[in-house]
Length: 288
Image 1 (spheres, rainbow, N blue to C red):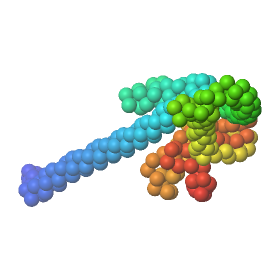
Image 2 (cartoon, rainbow, N blue to C red):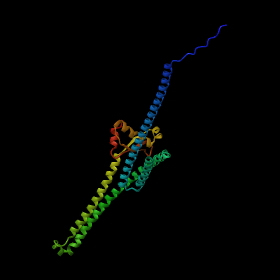
Image 3 (cartoon, one colour):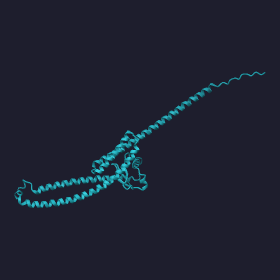
């Protein structure tokens, strides 16, 4: 009878165990390092996105502040009550946007933007009507002033002739001592000089108004569009796109366009530049 000999257990080399343990430990450390590296990269990406958004908001706030400065400057020179009211409404709207940008409130920002765009379009329409009425009124006022001035001059000339014929025989003795008393001619000369001074002041005011109108015209560019473009028109988006294009292609780090609105007939777009730019500048950069 054959006796089964007990099987001899196979011994595993200690070197193999050590190598396996080292491999496991290395893998664990590599996994942790990879996760830490990925987490650091994600954190850096979030920080960069946050800084970029912060920079964009900062630029947007600077643009809005610049627009408010332009509105305040226009309010100082505007004398038409209807136009002044429109400027006040625009100022209130942009102040709301500035407040939301500065405080970071975003819940109703899109709603406010839509309301603002609608209000600005209506205000531009009213402003165009007001400007037309204002121009017509100015022309009528100039014509009326010219007629009134001519009538006053004729009346003064006739009155001076009549007064001189009446006063001459009564004050013959006073004429002989004109070195001590003022003659009627001197008084009349003073009156004429005062009238001329007043007319000069009125003309200067008129010239100042004309200069302000000319400045407004120099900052305004009207671009004709088709019906399809008019239907998809978005004032706020268009203004930002144009300013961004100037920034990327012309390296202009400030806003070029202050407002972009449709005309009363909706067949053209009215672009108003910031104070440092003009319509001629836009024509020169029409490729952008």
